[in-house]
Amino acid sequence: MVSQVRGVQLARLLGQWHALPGRRRSPDYAALAGAVRGLLADGRLPLGVRLPAERDLAEALRVSRTTVTAAYRELRDSGHLASRRGAGSWTMLPGTHRVAPNGLWIPLDDRDMLDLGVAALSAPPELLPAARAAAEDLPRYLNGAGYHPIGIIELREAVAQRYTERGLPTSPDQIMVTNGTQHALDLVLRLALAPGGGVLVESPSYPNALAALAARRARITTYGLAADADGWDADLLLGTLRQVRPRVGYLIPDFQNPTGHLMPAELRERLVATAHAVGTDLVIDESFVDLPLDGTDLPPPTASFDRHSRVVSVGGMSKPFWGGLRIGWIRTSAPQVQRLAAARVGVDMSSPVLDQLVAVHLLTVAPDIVAARRAQLAVQRDALLGALASRLPEWRVTVPRGGVTLWAELDGPISSALARAAEEVGVRLAPGPRFGLDGTLERFLRLPFTLPATDLVEAVGRIAAVRYDLDRAGQTRWPEPSVIA
Image (cartoon, rainbow, N blue to C red; front, side, top):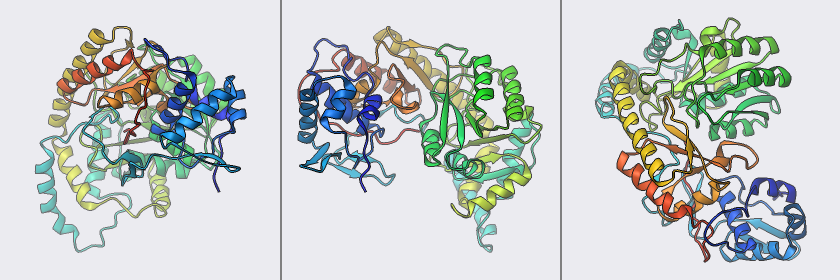
């Protein structure tokens, strides 16, 4: 059965579709068609969805029905809409696209891109020696079945030791190894959140976490982060927690994705106390905790203030080491680890032993790897900041104290349109609405500084070149972004 989106729903997703500044304004119908393509491009409008009737959408957008009719016609011409008399119109993609192994739609003729949609580094040189050493260790595991639902003991010991060194005493029994941080989050949500349960998240937040919550049919309440360096308003955050009383709170206090904010220790302590008082379990994403820049001192782990097993921490190897090494972990109480292991049976049996052994060897040289990463990221961040100041001085950016991303406030609600235009000149962007709900955050754009400095400067130059001509006339092809991480 084909699902349908109502006029008011599509209007909310479209946002400021017709308010795109530029030297030339295209007709409203062309701007509307382009905005719908953009929703398809970044995944906020699914394929195979029946669009609202022309009259319904015209009333919701407060435009003439002629404008909507012309926009639908243009979408049909570009291959993004199929219509049948009496059955309506539903979304699709042109025949030049295919389904990638990750399930996302990409162009068949996708060319090399400067990909600013993925906030992740390439592999460190230490990976190959670690892989060779892991292969030498593997034979002692080959006589067993190979299933380790909570992870091999060497890796759990190594992860527990890292928490202990951060001031949070942890035993290996409190660690479960997962297939990446996203897998860790999914397992925690399966155990902690019933379908339809209430969840509090920051806005903006990590898109794949929002997708995991949507899969649980969660009732999401957002808390808006400030764009300045402070990030969290303590009274507003805690007041929202007391008022909403969600079952789960998902937060990223360590170099928040995408803003880069760092939550102070005092707020962490108050947050944990308030969560306990209102019966909320906190899921703390520590993906970027290893990447402070400029000598920034890290506050104590959020879980160090927990006395009632209300805090579950998730982290992994993707950001400081390599995204291709799918190793993550959960840090919680030992009984909770056993419950997670039981829940895991319905998802997978365990993480690959060889990957876990690679992770063990990488963690033994982690100080050297992380130090090099921090130095690399600081240089690339400064190169990106310099290019933005030179080419796009109207944009406002708060310098992050760690992590791998900038959160830029643009000079208009143009994020999705800019992402579409940049794709045409070989730059892939993650528009602001991907990090929020209901089409908000069109004035913002996430810019990771994980590419080499020369590539970042080149990317900003291309973005600046298309910035002031977003609504140029003419037929446009609409390639699709591949993945945001």
